[in-house]
Length: 340
Ligand SMILES: *Cc1c(COP(=O)(O)O)cnc(C)c1O
Image (tube, rainbow, N blue to C red; front, side, top):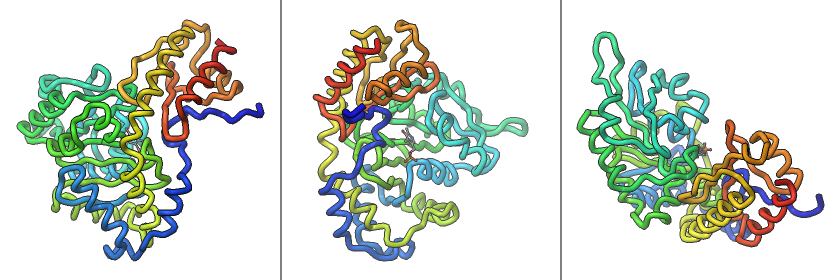
């Protein structure tokens, strides 16, 4: 295959653009552990404001944002609730349990979403026998439900019910900006109803490193203890933060292109005989039973034809991003037509 592979494996596959690299190279830096990196400080202030919270902390990965938030919000032996395909449970090697001593309990959702009544039914105040469910983790957009978006009203109602039950609420907002672009509800609209929330810069935003976790002043002060303990306190990391600032300025509005490319991809896959979950944003899950292939077989064949997907269980996933344009999606569908 001499043609370029069209990489729909994930929106983590982007390379920093020349302009982003230039911004990173020019970054002013200092010792971030001592709060002396001006670029990190600027990014933290900007993301705190963006998400409607008092303070924020720069971390190397989204996984560490979740791990730290769970550590701050819970005491070992308590339980946290999340939707049954939640990333915290399915893709973070049980860090919440292994590191933080948390029991993980799930709620069966519809495209990643559930109701306030489902939450109340799953909640336990705790007793001499049963762990208290002290934390709710939401995911917006929901990755394994297919980049699915919670409507603001349902999201706020669930968060409110959790607070009424004395639970803390944390949002895994790895792709929150996709939800902002898809719904028109603002980032603070999603940030304010919850106690902590983060965004990932290495997904649709196209930066190579970094995620920022936001919350109250007290929450972030506590988060710093775990940042240090887990080895996430860095030094002249402003180089990475400059890529994130560049992404905030240049890569948010364009997420709408990823969403329309995902819609095109979904239509094309359906026309080829796949069973497609209609995408809300940039993630397309599809089944390939109708083609007489397993998900693994399909991904191998597609890869040989120059289009990369990933098999997740019995389904395949394609994700659109900064390094894939509308012509690439058309070309990908034409390559796939030779194997379907
Ligand atoms: C990617 C992802 C994470 C983890 O982020 P990393 O930066 O890869 O550690 C957490 N939650 C969701 C929903 C994700 O898609």
